[in-house]
Image (cartoon, rainbow, N blue to C red; front, side, top):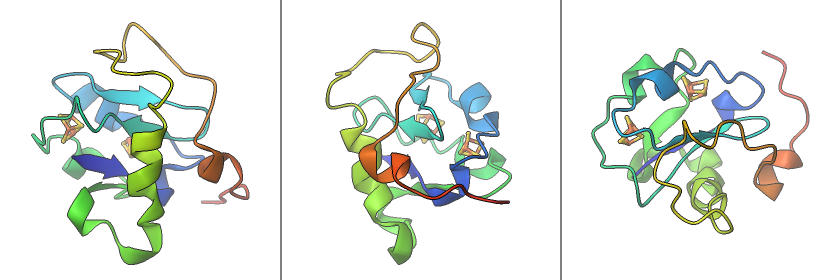
Length: 105
Ligand code: F3S
Ligand code: F3S
């Protein structure tokens, strides 16, 4: 799966949201999250992010590895919604993300 990492936090450009053909990128409070089971690894989202927040999970830079887990765990209580458009913004974040200081960009 692809994952979204730290550069998205407090930025949320959302170009990725428009690009994903299967609508498996979900909007949290401070960042967006890719559903690990719904993502088909098409890779369309990766080049459109202006802050380079998106990585194939094996390529996530070491300091941001906990975002691999955070993307997956974000969906623990949501299951597999099958498309983000119908859910809209989800007013929460993974606890690790929620605890981050405000990211000044
Ligand atoms: Fe975030 Fe980049 Fe998407 S900033 S919302 S991962 S385009
Ligand atoms: Fe969508 Fe990106 Fe996966 S475009 S299918 S989230 S690789």
